[in-house]
Image 1 (cartoon, rainbow, N blue to C red):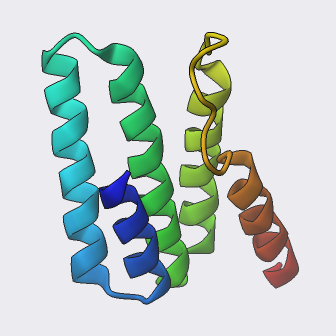
Image 2 (image 1 turned 90 degrees about the vertical axis):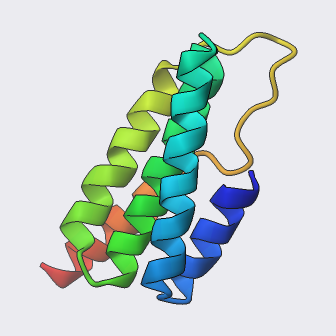
Length: 108
């Protein structure tokens, strides 16, 4: 969660190097979880990684890439089976995907 929060903040501040470091840290966490056969949590981390990548793309003016990345994250999130005791995401990926889509349409 810390790498996700840092990555989002860094992307919003347009600190590319710091955002990329957070993205790399999320990828390492995902890989470790996969190694431990924790596929549910690995997927959750991958969703977060994709969201940070999308926000970074957006901050760099790559609206189409940002929208595609956020849609990928939202699709992964939608496909995730949740048990009744598993908490949901802090901010569903569909929310920023909708904002990105609106921004892309406005520039067309």
